[in-house]
Length: 569
Image (cartoon, rainbow, N blue to C red; front, top):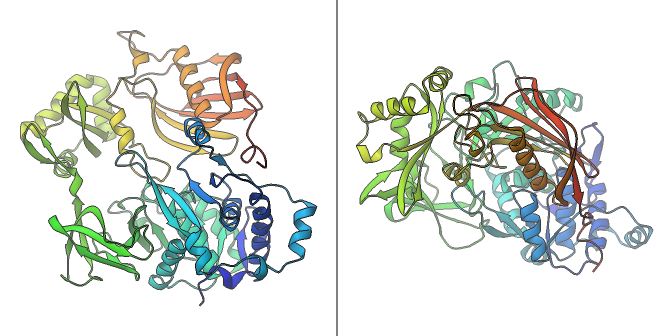
């Protein structure tokens, strides 16, 4: 089966299946790309940001901008701070434009083959910038050419044997390289299809598979460890060839819950995909177009034609090679080299400390980190507790509970390796790519002004946050010593903050409507915050276990929204 973008320009095959089950062919897609490209080519700005919830419109704009000779930046989110930062560099966000008679006339004079020249010269100059996840530090931009992305698609095509007409269904974002490659570019190059919407829950995946069953085509699911660990054995996959998982290590014991194989993919934004495996403790197998070797300290080094560099790239991962000197050798991951720290002249492995903490009956999951306070390095831990342990924590108080944990750990670890500071959460916060947000975890040990964001789901005009109210929050101090509650004024403050982060044109809050505070928010409580917008008004609702805690509308002053970089420049 062929694998090239150019091979399917005039194909009547189905590329995209919409939520209403309407179908878009490859030919219609490439005509949409050509039309948008004519508009974008009139814009003078050379670099454009792309953040689009709709997978089909995202793919149209990505290819259209590259065809128009623009560079494309794929940010990890579209919050107001980032939007303002990019605007200061004269980088604006692209939007699809309506059809015009002028563009239609120009397109009718050319065939798609005449309009598009998806040859090696074009693929090599078309530039896309990805952000790293920021899970281990500040996010940085990683450049990739379309040729390098196509090389990676070819590597997937050579490594995995999928049926000719399989449908891609994704629970991960196409803004990240994993979702972009597996959901969009692989089908585009191989003549397969993708389901347009990104879904959020295991039940959604099963429902989609039932809805498309009449097409009598197999499908594959592109997911993450964060979603797969929430799977239950009563959610049954239908016509599913395999489930792909990437973005972190899949927890042991998840596979039996799914009636389909799970293919784990290991890689990074810098290197792209490196290797894959199909069992929890199996060795990792390098992709067909990836060579590996063990450098100093057994550090994994990668060389591939799909990375941003053609040189060997050090990954920071320690490995054990099964066949020394073989660039295709299976290997075992042994942890991160950058998790060896020196604390008071003593070398500690944070992975080893985490392993000992995880042995405690009270702890389900933990992350250990080092942060600086008053020129001293402090060892700290964020832990997810069992239900029973969480009840004990709230009954006896944090000081007594933490002292008990430390006493147990003193029998397993030397004193310097026992974390001094602790935060207890119901789950680990994750970023937009479903990865552990290590930078955010470190911020939890600074003065806390906002509730902990455990997760967020975003649509164009609505947003939902999953929040946890840590007892360390500043607003609990003084309200009240023997019975702390989170005050209404503090609730309005963080609602304003999240609204302005999501909608960049909101400036300041100058009024309220129908404010109701119906119940209390206490320490350790988990709350759902739903925001929706109509014009300059943002409605909110805070709920806990289906009970409404607060609701109302905030009235904002709003700047006029920029449309596609404002205008033809």
